[in-house]
Amino acid sequence: MNTLIDAGEWCKLPAWWTMEAAIRTFLPLKPGQYGQSESKVYEIFTRVIAIIAAALMLPLTLIGLAVGTSLHFIGYKCLAKTDYLYHKSLCPEAPNEKKLKVLSLNSCFMPGGLSLLFGGVTPSAARIDALAKKIFQSDPDVVCLEEMHSVEADFALMQKLEDRYTHFYFNIGHQVIYFDSGLFIASKRKIENPEFTPFSRVVDVHNLANKGIFQFEVSGAHIFHTHLFPSSDTEARPNGQEIAIRGQELQIIVDKIQQLPDQTAPILVVGDFNIAKEREEYPLQEAFTHFVDSAPKAKTWRHFGVKVEEPEEPEILDYSLLWKMSKTTSFITKLFSTYNKERPDLSLSDHEGLISEVTW
View 1 (cartoon, rainbow, N blue to C red):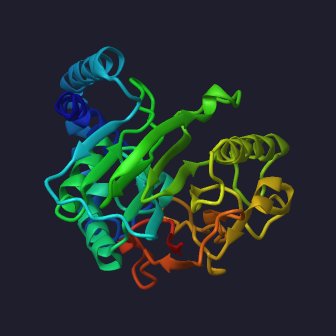
View 2: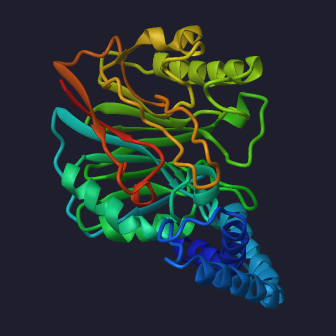
View 3: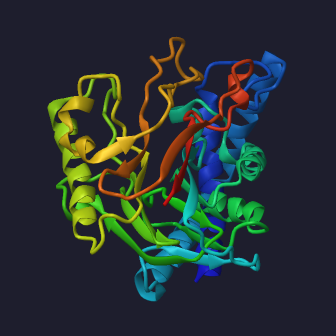
């Protein structure tokens, strides 16, 4: 199954390459940054050549897209028994303990140059090695990533991590045409009762990405990993409908937690909520009253301005929350730094990550 999906993604690579070439063509010239040439003249030349090559390859690109989509249809609609893919590495499984270290990060790993367009960071292939190294340095027991919308990046990152991590859940909420949820899990310990709930089943909203909740148990703790609905303009200025949608999504999580047989167990909710913590929406979301938040007051998102001259104001959009009824002895959250202040183009993501350590 995994091989079939990987083959389908490989067939789609010319289409993603064409999209990236098109996106690069209209980005501002930033010599020596974001994979661009040191020379403006040479950069313009390579962009022209890339567009010509993309035009010449169009028939092959369309054939590859059709074949890749067909393989994904067979895999997802005919063979898949779950709405996620699973991989177990040869790395020995770590024993259970009554303490857990969880990393959550919006990775901005999108195909076709979309990370340049929407995140202002280089394509995922240029960041995978550095991100894996950073994860090894922090050594979390469980890795929860958002915006892993590239299946190619899923497989590439798994190859980097499988020497230290045993269980991988990826391509969660997969779809034939549109993006999956973007959620990605790597765990050193055994995961039990994995379940994905797409928001579209409950909230009457449709998006190019199949956003939702991936919940599972590890070492007796419950983790709810999610990425909430985005704002059309900016999270600093959400409209009433967007606030209501995110409120519904948060309530789905609260309802699921309240259905657990033991709400005193460690229960964590992590992910990119797209709710600016220091803006007017945060106090309007009643769901936050059910949780403890130990995160530092540091901005977790900013746009570096590769596509705009005036970057937006940094915000706190990412959360790692502990259910208030959980009986724990400690809950500490620290920043997982991804920014490169001197060279923003070398940053690992447009989001900072959070690492939470919970003991019970």
